[in-house]
Amino acid sequence: MEKKIERKNYRTLERLVRGFANHRRIQIMEVLQKEPEMSVDEITELLNINYKTAADHLRRLAIAGLVLKKSDSVSIRHRLTPRAEYVLKFLRTLE
Image (cartoon, rainbow, N blue to C red; front, side, top):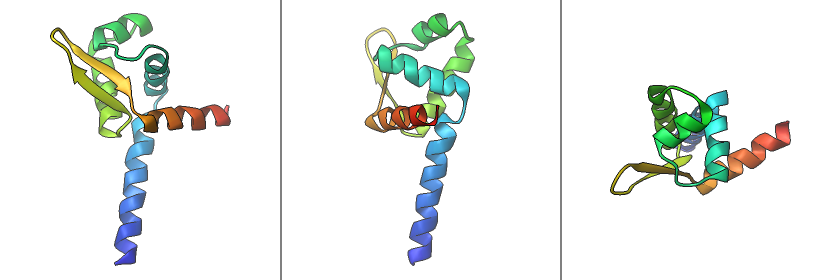
């Protein structure tokens, strides 16, 4: 039983690491740290990237539990989770 729990924890960690294991996703997290509650359109304009690419990166960040999506009357707003803040702090220690 204990081995199954450990394996599950490893898979959870893998999902988290894969969520931010891309330079563009790290860049998006840094943008959201400075400017919370951004739409995909705002992120694509700021980073000069394709809408579909940005939307896919945000989807992957959300799956990893690093970004929360909130709907307002016009668009979907994105913000970092506390876990994402920890990830960014960790990444800065690696620089």
